[in-house]
Image (cartoon, helix red, strand yellow):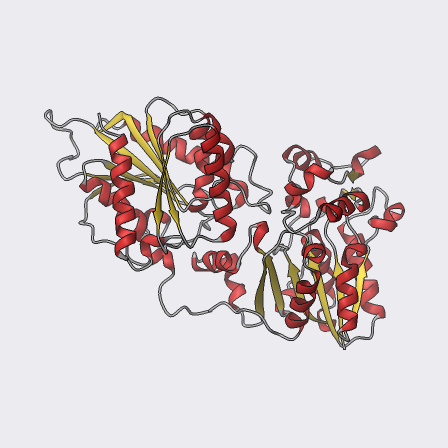
Length: 510
């Protein structure tokens, strides 16, 4: 008989699993909703010394007293940290681990990354000796739950219940590093991704395709995936679907990712049009693609040229090769605008993790300074073009456009942090920044078959732009997908690229 041990996220307890547990038992399985020390009706059992190890021990005591031969540990959000800690010490007892809208923390990681409040996160990170009230993190207020995860699918009564029954979280559970020997990585696992909270199988496949070594183990045949079309609390919003997915996961079902793709990953496929090679200069992290008549020394009869700076998305692991400026799409764009008389600029910025947006923004600013200082570039005619998750980096430029910035473009962009991207600072919200963009021209290429979790950020951006009367031109790509420039080169896709480039260069006219 399968026994499910159900471990909830921060500020909640076993009560959140009540309906799922009942349904599991009706199916013939055993179900054990866990209330960890200091949580729900056990809040009085916690003290300043309550930490992640306390919660690991809670689970170990339960595992040791059960005689089930087929034990599945389910961790939701924060709950995956004690689940992994306990499974790592009892791997012989565990049949499968289920990550229910939860990350993949590694040895040494802290659950602090789940705290959406930047100031609170920084304060807790510096906390060395818990004292007074510092050892407890207050639960979210009703209007704050959305910051901890998407509340899509939660009826008002359920959101009220989530608020009423939440309790302070012992700070040590968030600040103590997870200790893993590595045994847990040999166990079968299933990821249940909640699309409305910013996760999807397509997104995971994209990360694997980028060659990030942290995600390569997701191609192990013992790893499977499911999607749920709901927010971050699926046990409340979709209990029947969660029950079904857990039973199927225990049976070994779910989507597998290909370990050896039959074709190159999407980002390494050819650009959708043949573009002649142009002279390229590499300066640090920056590549400049020049028109044919612009040489190393600018002739007296040649005027400085406008520049288009292309900003890739990510995160991209620092060991990924080739780096983005050598990917066919960005080389293609750089050559294409160079062939039309502008300088095409590509940049390898350091967006290696969700916490790196600040550093990536610095890299883009430095690249722009370098380009504008080049005598072959007209410093007063520059456009910035952002792609995918690099779209968040447009926020600084939209919020306070400098006079030399003639246009901002974005292709299949992410324009607001996903609900589960807690490490992305509040500074990087183009859907807010566009309200102060004024009449800055914005060219947005939107694909019809965009991932749902990204499409909602684009609609949020366009709604804010309309309210503030920002100058947005939308170029739609019928049947286009994320990264459409390397997806086969259909005529409608080529037309969209040509139209977007013409529009951007039009804004760079003298």
